[in-house]
Image (cartoon, rainbow, N blue to C red; front, side, top):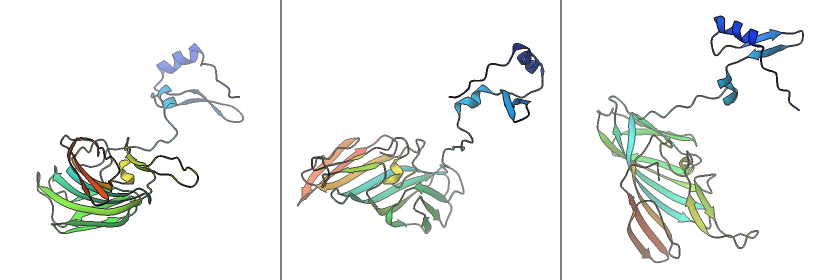
Length: 235
């Protein structure tokens, strides 16, 4: 059972109001065993101990459009992903961008301009040899495989234990879960326009945000193309 300390006496509060104590400082009363808090900033009660600072990502070079191509293998819970990303420089002398992307396989990054890139299973960092000029646009392509991702892209299909489980694939990016399958700046401040090309078995229905541009069948597979012309949160 936890013990609730009684409020400090009014005489103490009146003395505290006359002191030079800053709002974030704590007054304690010394006892033989420990120091007992008497007054503290009440705002501290609404945060965890030692919270880590959270900042928006740098958008000196920001994505303005992403062409997403996805080949789904629902039974294997895998997706082959290719992204054609258009970026624009909003700060002179910028030359790098960092994308979120967790546990991708066979990552490749290509661009018309000379670049170097690295991937540490958490982020893809791309550095151009030549700096951007302010307002300049450039493109690069990122391709990789995701297998049964932890979040963001969810596969469902029957197995030996759940033979009646429905078969589907869905995405859920709220708030920063796109990074588990989509190489992007996974933050609400990044809002590119998007086109999405999805290929799956032909007996599946494909739905996405935006307007459907085409829906075609080729052999055993169906390909659906969707366009979202308004800036959005990844997809």
